[in-house]
Amino acid sequence: MTRGFLGLDRRGWPGTIVVAALIALIAVGLPMLNALVSPQRSLPPGTVIDVGRATTFTAADGWSEDVERTSTLEGRAVLTRGALSYLTEARPSTRSLEDEYARFADDIRHSAGAQLFNGATTFTTESGLTGISGSYASPTGEGVFAVFRSGDTAVRVLAKGPPDAMASYLGDVERMVQTLRIGTT
Image 1: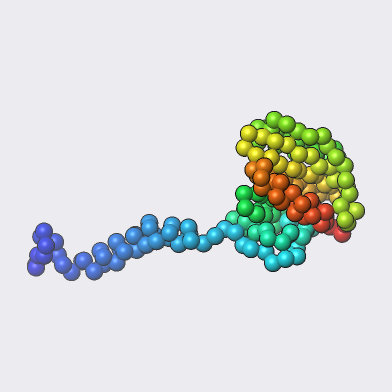
Image 2 (image 1 turned 90 degrees about the vertical axis):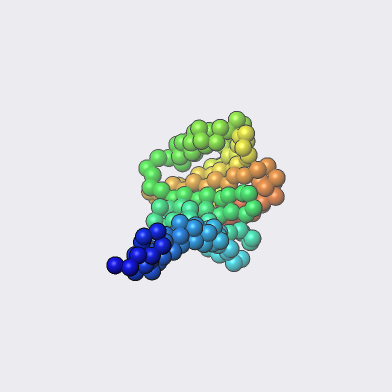
């Protein structure tokens, strides 16, 4: 038997080098590649976003879709513009619109540490869908939210981010909310 460096057999080295290279690729190369691929997908002007549960809205110009957090199977679409995020969720519900609003406001209060809530405002979208909206401030930012119901579907909309981003893009948020449709509304 021929011994090589440190008494090791040289015939097994090519296989060892291939295995080591594969391990290095998995451990270092794939995370680097993943970091290079953006989870954001730029949206062309006028893109209609399918949330799921027959719910759609039209994205405002300049927004991107967060493809990692968006799922029509889970009834969720997430858009971003700078530090502002716009979340729309569609889920089954038998509660009244007022009960859905109260529950969503409580969820925000508990998760965001909201300290200041502005009262609920009832409004109607371009498609005739009635919703209730509100806004809040928290130690980490500001947000506006709305709730809609049609048939057995409730839709929650939440836009949140730092005060400067909220001020800059509030018009976009309002336009996207106005284009919301559930089913045939």
